[in-house]
Length: 485
Image (cartoon, rainbow, N blue to C red):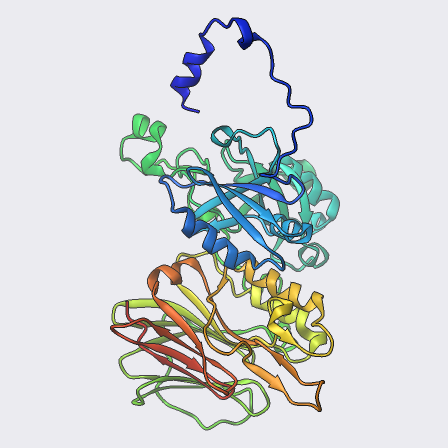
C-alpha cells in the first residue's frame, strides 16, 4: 500500500461495521502453500521484467518437479515448488544473483501483504583470510559467524586443512547494516586482524557498506562528500576475487596429485602460435590457425587434447588440464570467457571433479559460457535406461552450476545427445552435451539457439536470422564461428 494512503487511513475515525473484525475461520486458501512457497524480492534500483526474472531462475534452479511463478509487486515474486526438496535446495544454494542484483528469499505465509513484505537478512559464504592456524576449527567458525551475523555452516575442506588460505563460513547477515570488514582478535593471538571477503557479493555502497544501492545513489555520501572518493571505507576488495583451487598448498605436488585441477597460465599473454606435436592424450595443443573455425579436440582416451582458432580471434589462456580448457576469447569487439569441459567418466571421481569445476568460478560480470560433454544429466527426464540415473550424481551437477551462477541454455532437436547400445531393453540414452552460461552471456548474445547435431554426440549453437553464427561440438571436435550480436 502507498505510504500516503496508509497514513490517510490511519487518521480515520471508524464506526459501525468498521469496528467489528471480519471472521476468516474456515477459509482455505488455494493461492498459497506455505510449505512449498517462497517469496523473492530482487534488490534492483529499477523494475525488472517479471518474465526475465522468472525465466532466469527457472533455468538456474532446474526443479525436478514443477515451479510456479506469480508476480506480487514490483520485483517481488511468489515461487511455488512442486516438492519440498526443490525448495530446500534453492534455500541451501543462497545467495542468488540476477546479474549483479541480489534476490532475497523467505518462506511465504498466508498473512503476508504483497506490497509490504519485509526482507531483512540473506546468507552469504564468507572467507576469513589471515586466520591463525589454531583457529581453523568449527568452534571458532561458529563464534566468528555469530559475530558477523548468524552462523549457518562451515566448509569442512577449509576447516580440516590448516594449510588452507582461508576459513569459509556461511553466515546470515542483516542487509540493512554495513557489511563487516574485519574481525579483531584478542591478546592470545597478538591482536591480529582477520580480513573478510564475500562470495557472490552483489552491488553495495562503497560509502556506507549497505547492500541494495551503489555509491552514486547514496544520499548520505552525496550530502557529506559530494564526489570525493578518496575517503571511501568499502570497496571491491571485499569481494572474493577468485576461488579457483583455494585450498591447495604451495607444494608442487598439490597440482600433480589431482588431475582435475587446472594448471595456471598467464592471463595477459596470447597463446603461442607454434603448434608442437602431441606427446600424450593429456597434452594441450594451442595454435592460431587459418581455418575458418575454432576447434576444441577431445583425445582418444576421452580427455581434452587441443584448442585451435582462426586468425582474427584473440585467445588468452586461463588454465587447462585433461578435463578443462579455460580461455578468454575476443573478436569483433566482443569479449567473453569460454570453458571447454569433458566430464569425469569415472563415477567414483565425480565429487572431486565437481568441486574443481566450482573452483573455476570467479565472481565477475564477464560473459562466461561452458560447453562440452559433462557426462551427467540435470534431471531424470534427460536419461533413459532400465534403471534411473543415480540422484546423488544429478544433485552434484545441479549444485555445481548453481554455485557458479550458470544456467542451462536449452536446445532444440533430438531429446538425447548420447547413447550406449546394448541388447534391448538395456540401451542407455542421455543428454550429456550442453551449454551453460551466466546472465552476462545471455545479455551479450540474447538471440541464441542450440540444436542437437544430427546423430553425432554433440550440439550446435546458432543465432536467429539474419546473421547466423554457430557453435558446434561433437565427441571429437568443438567448432566456434562468430557469435555476433
